[in-house]
Length: 613
Image (tube, rainbow, N blue to C red; front, side, top):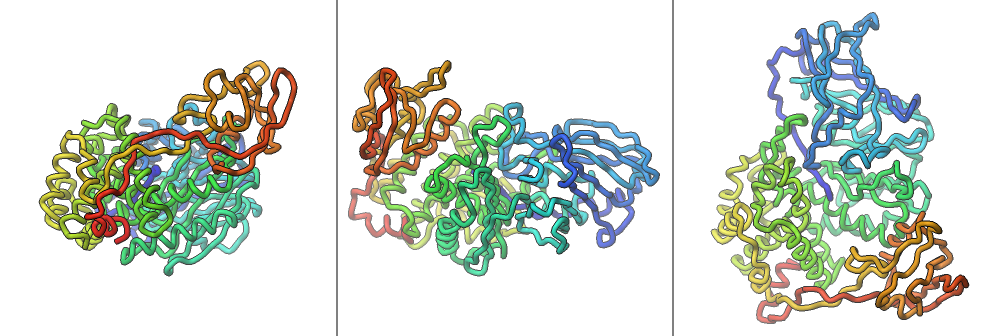
């Protein structure tokens, strides 16, 4: 996700269960999703099942979906669940838990109906990550993450699904699936099994998309911006540059023929809109949620980091994954021990490729790794990563999940450095992932317990020692030791901070709740305010002709993230009741932080192989 995720290829485990009468080639599950007659912000779903031969069958909506690493209970958003016979008479249904409905007299069932509520409206009441959730905004936007709308029958997840979506002609569905119906108001999608359906989100909105090709892969970029500030056309140049660089970095790794990036931009001033920002990866798509209030430059920068992370999941766990992922149980999931690889190595690649392909400087790369070291230090550094991963759905392990993007990436970096050192720069962690891909692959999962041994066999004993000591063991990683192998040493660096928030935590500003006015709090002002002559208790009325107060203070802070040193700026303030304009150049406050720099020139060859090889 940045929040992630994986791709699954399910193997039939119940081919002879007797739960249904037809052969797999003859039977399919028909699903109708009505986006036209939306009532009370709910979407009606109709399921036509195969003919059951058992007296009871259970229909499940997922409790957990791959890559979210959380218990989300999507069944809580289902209302008015009914099972009907051919005469339209309701059959007895028992809700056995938050996500499951047991249907009695299942042999008579010919239709199931229910209503779906969206998750964006009530994010203050649950913890579902926005890119994994759903939005229902009639005639404007439907974020149709299929796992939130469609379920499966116990024992028959491997049947084909034929999904028909009825929608207003003004809405267009962006997805990596192929629409089999040419009509403007109906889409038909077919997948060979449930696992593939839930990995294919659809975003319905007024058409705003671009397409381009990268090394034979068709890329679709679709954008929903409620204000119209951002468009697919505006974000595409940066996305094309990034994804081309990623494909160049990956080299011979195979990937899908089509990949979709579905970008939902939320109105943060609305309480009933999405506020969980990031992305969720699928084998052929990424769903992204970001604030619509971002500047174009800041959005482009965030998309570069977030979408690149999700795209790199085509390496792991799409291609390389354990049995826990291959045979994922949506309602009783067993988690793998190897989040350090699925999320950590993926996040490392999302940063390494940028220095490798010349998108960022060496200094930028070291700053990023230093930031991850600082963030990891805020977490429990003695909790073993394998244990945390296997138990990530439960406390206290779930509270450490975000460390997969921090220490997890650093684990990948250290392994990369070890392999580079031992091979005299000839190989790195990408070479290891290519070997693992050849050994396993999309259809062949590994046993969790065998992975470390296999990696050691493919690399060096020192890699195995590192994994057993610092990943399966509780010993913190001595990062300086590994940096020193490539000539990099610890130092103090100056980094620009936010003009309104010190360390992104302590505010320089406050709000008068009665008037909603934003004012500079007493104390030593930072360089930005000093340069412009803005003083304590001055009210910030507007910046570059945009008025601000409590209602859009978030917009102001987000806009400041894209400010550049030396750019012109105009701030309207109110001092002692009188308004005045303060004009000048942006001076960003600088902060001293731990950082790293290359100092040992005897290691130049190895360092260059690490970052550019």
